[in-house]
Image (cartoon, rainbow, N blue to C red; front, side):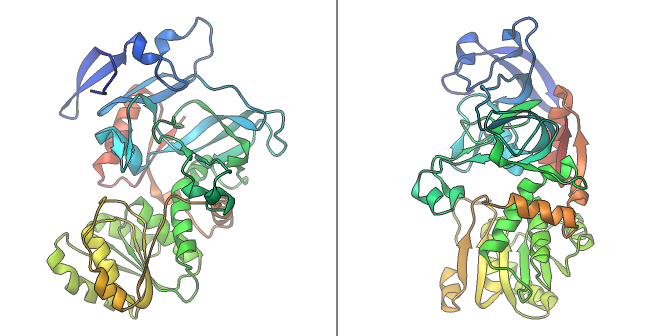
Length: 395
């Protein structure tokens, strides 16, 4: 139960063997939402903008989402494609992701693309009907980090579906026009939505200075591991080996262009033997390792497999704290770098998609519409893993 909220049990139903409560906020609690109100409060004849709200643990509810006024530099966008990210699933299952905690109902979703419906009076580069991909983070542009160009680290960042900011799994959203990027005719709206996860891989490759002389190891063949692999190839990496515990995901990685695949265990005792197999699959030294999982074992493996003078880039955030062999890595001058989200990546992602250097379409394995039942099924599919890589809503 969310602290400080008054709930009424609306209905109880059984979903995949679990009891799920559909909870309705009392009138007092509804007033606490940021820009949203329930369908029951909608005035007769008012245009309904429906959204998927996270209202409690394992509980999503489609209800009305009132849009803020359109500012002079804003665009109102009709959402057409929204993907489910691992962070969305974390919020659903635990009501938190890392240090971000859901304390009141929140619209979910941040991987998105749509069609411009209306633009503010000062917007010159977009017109209604334009197809756009949305960068989900709004920085302050006043702090030292923003002025230094590292706006992704802005402490005042307002990011879709990061508490207390609402997300984009809705019929329409209002967003700064300069964060809406026009899509070429040969890039679909689904591909536009995939610019968000692809941006993580592109930013990681920039941070690690990937180029034509960089042999790359990727730990984890989930969605972020796969887009990081694709980005590394687009940046010119001549040889890429990817590692995972799951045969199906390794098969997908191989089909998408991995030069080598290595199946590993979850047992820390196997690290030394698995490092030998990784180096054999690479056929030489590992220049840069990307840990796209973020667990003790994956980071330990990456540090141990990377050659002296190489780099390890931590992308995944599986564990909040880790115990890893830093001292041996330090004696080999292995640099450890981190990334947080991305910056200035959408134009390059769109160019990679337009030119065909990267094809994200095979990553979209499941598609759902936007009904209450389909929203619940989509999140269960994404959370369940299996054959699911990227689950996409078509609105």
